[in-house]
Picture (spheres, rainbow, N blue to C red):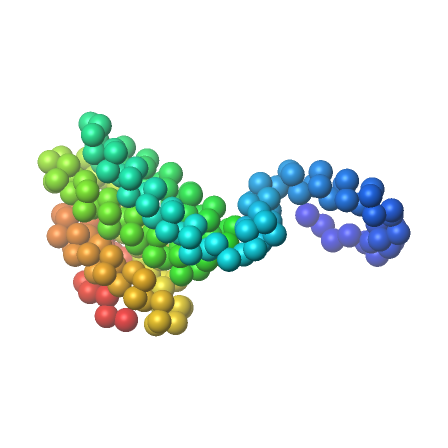
Length: 189
């Protein structure tokens, strides 16, 4: 989107307030990300970030547990993880919750292993060909973001991070990708 020229800016500022509001509302409605952010900031007062994150965490856990009742495969689990990753991204875009992105993503990946590890182990390594690199790449990105946070935030995800790293290094399909991504064996930060 280009920059508005000065004449247009001046003309817009001279418009009647009611007409500007009408145009603004029409434009805002077209951008769902902006709508989510405005709901968070203007309606919720920007103070529900932790509650939203806790609710999302609970939904992730319930959904992964519910999925256990179905005939899960590594490919289906990958679909669940991608769906929840998109929901986490929506949360971050609306709330600007950087530490929440890390703790929620680490929780999601660790919980997927905790709940579905038996299923994953029951399939041949080849069946995890798409899941394994996704997990390793996602964790590599998240660790990069975590390293930029102040260490006081680490308490939010330290246990899940360690649990996740143990699963990644003990699950043969993810081991090679973890090596290539230079993932640590332990979370020492």
